[in-house]
Length: 423
Ligand code: SF4
Ligand code: SF4
Image (cartoon, rainbow, N blue to C red; front, side):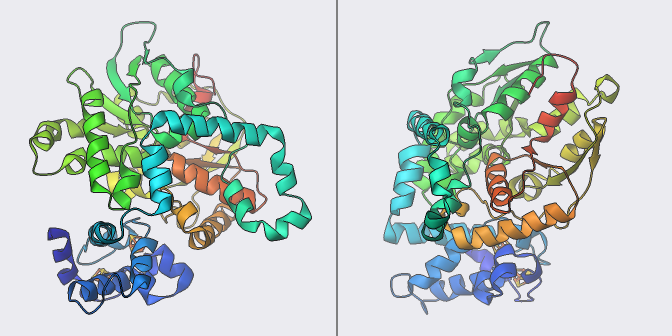
């Protein structure tokens, strides 16, 4: 497989160690890019066997796929592709885990089930059961449960899908038409953000279409479940890659990165990939669309209360799509907001899709380190462009007892916009 050819290009220099979040936490060679590549090389050479040495799968699975090693590697070794290829092979042997069957195939692949789960989460949050969970006696024994509970944001709203029509038109003539790809996490956990972004974009003259899409497929891809990835891409492609849509946008960096690579998702050598490839450039991270296509018009913005905002770069936006300046430009354009950079803003938060749930210990440690950097920046607000990072960092902040608001940059912009864009 071509992804395995990448292994030969690793010269074992070790430059990747200093940027790898999992190595940073464990200081174990096997949890760095170099170490993981070596393990996969030994597997391919037949010196290890997935069945005999299950610890290897764990090390491959521990990788966040954040690509920090890739962009810092002198040889640009695509460690993430090697890890994905290895996961695909491992999946062939072991099949899907219970977690993958329940969460990825069982829930993420079916929007209605996910929305029903969101009703249960809201009931739990509103019922006060959370207070029992936090009582001192239970706390000692239920640490893990509390860890998972910390992901649930306060005041969780009903899914965004039910709050929005399928087409939202501006009052006057539309400047352009765009699909708003409503990803799973945005739909279930980010209704407030989605509403705010939709209001803002429509108030700036964008006609928005919100088709009933399925999961983008990225969670399934990270586990090597290629069949489900292709099925989901085949479902979404006719809904979003239409000639009359000028852009495909989303507030989720992970979805944006996935959709921009849908030729690979559907199968690189297939006729469907050929058809979709010329349209991929229309996929835009919403920050980029706002800066490049709409303009910020800072003179029209009303001042917000003086606030220091720090921005976390999500891996899929920064290293996947090259989005770095647009969200920062947005924050700097809003009167009253001051952008303060945190240390290692570009380092993975440890969320990595569902990594926070599947690897709670490592993920929790990475989040805690990130939260310390947020705190040290002196910021009053955290800006993030990805619902998975928002969940992860929101949970990390809650566990640290901090009450920083976590908002999308365009949400901040919408709050300062003249009309029709309330958060
Ligand atoms: S992955 Fe790149 S940076 Fe890391 S050891 Fe190999 S060549 Fe060096
Ligand atoms: S992708 Fe991220 S977690 Fe995986 S080896 Fe590279 S730096 Fe480490």
